[in-house]
Image (cartoon, rainbow over all chains, first blue to last red; front, top):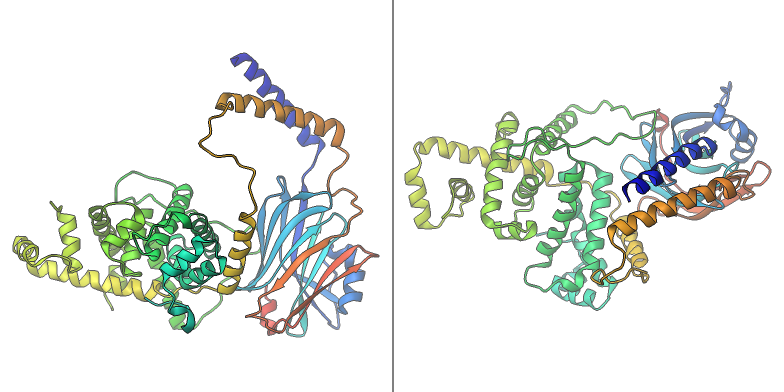
Amino acid sequence: MGRTLAFLISFVSLIIGATSELQGAETVWSGLVIAENVAQPQTIPPELTRIEGSLKKFFGYNQFQVIGQSQKTLKTGQEDWLATSKFFGLHVDAQGESAAGYVLNLKLYKEKELLLETDAKLSKRSPLVIKGPQIGSGQLLLVLVIQ
Amino acid sequence: MQTEATLAQADVSDLDLVTRCQAGDTEAFDQLVTRYRTRVFGMIYNMVHSEQDAWDLAQDSFLKAWKSIKRFRGRSSFYTWIYRIVMNVTIDWLRKKQVKGGGSEFDDSVQLKHIEPASKTVPKSEALPHEMIERREIRGRIDKAIAQLSPEQRAVILMKEIEEMQYHEIAEALGCSIGTVMSRLFYARKKLQNLLRDVYENI
Amino acid sequence: MKTFEEKWTAWLDGQLSERELAEFEASLPDRAAAEAEKADVRKLGVLLKRELGVSAFANEEFFSHQLRERILESSVPSAKREANASTWWTIPRLLWTGTASLAVFLIFTIFVIRDKNPAEESQYLTQILNARVDPVVSPNATVSMFEVKQDRVTVLWTEGLQSLPADYAAK
């Protein structure tokens, strides 16, 4: 029984080793972004390049700056993480995979206050943008992208 | 003992609400939660020093209380009963998180693990008015001192000094004897006296 | 019979009976030092009560709301059997079965499902399942959802959140 068990464990380990090469885990980028209109806008951050057009058209701003970000590689799909700036925290709680993408629970905190909570299915090639509060003359946006 | 119940609801005793809960009335349980949530959260927060964890543990405690409400026999107050659940949940959690040292009551090697946010950016501390800085420092000293107590010592000192519970209530909440409560209080106070003497001496 | 620690604690807290008090105080080698320590412990208690007695509990209503939802979820009948029932599934059998199932699953995953990564080239747009704004913090806030199909961007649009000064844009 001992030898058979050892064989089975070795077999499974080999498969796990092979599997990890064949199937990469997904990485989710979460960003806290300040959108505003300025005379000389800076280059858009690389994470937002793909949706630059949509952001500008939809929100009407010409500059987008990242004030807080986090990158999390999802291995089990059950991880949780935090993207923070000085005053804001975006808590992301991955609650599993489905055919449509990753089920995420998102909470936006302003210091200790919970401003907004949402549950979403985040799909690849389909970024999620959440409009947060107005900040000065700009806007806080939360952006989540599967990279 | 302060309660957050509205004036109309204040007339309804905890026991009446528990009886309704035992019949499946979730609204009655909601009222009990409203009465005790701040104290439960505060108690747990003082034990674990993390708002997010305190929130989760408080939720877990109340959920456990709901699931076991039919087992409440009324031999103690609801308040003591819920604290028993809170303490079990919190102390279990602390035991799993702590790096244990020796088994003695003066356990200097016991530390709370600090959970860092996953983000690359971490909020920097802001300049605050002088007195707020001082209060934060004092609070920091107290938190650090309490973190050096074992989970059970933390529980007794907080239940005695903050909640002003009687020995027998604390014993019931922790599932131990009154003598054990008194003994733990003795060592917890000794330790805190050593660590915080310069802080409380000016009171 | 109480230990010294128990008597000391009870003395500090004024919990000794008249007879016990007289006995204990008579046994103290240095009454003045003991009284000084008693005063110390009182100050410690005052300090702890002052600093730890008030905890900021943000979002109490949301706490209750979240708890209500968890209670509702937990009341859905579970498929668990009674814990006390006897079972054929001993621990070694469970280990064997678990390991064998894992091996079968991994083989299946590699050779059959490998190409079907859940989020790979998904035809799905990101979906918002639900969204809530704290009514206490933002009583007039509303939430709606838009999809920008061209770039496959899903937008959760909020209105009525409290505006904040520019300082809040700090990194």
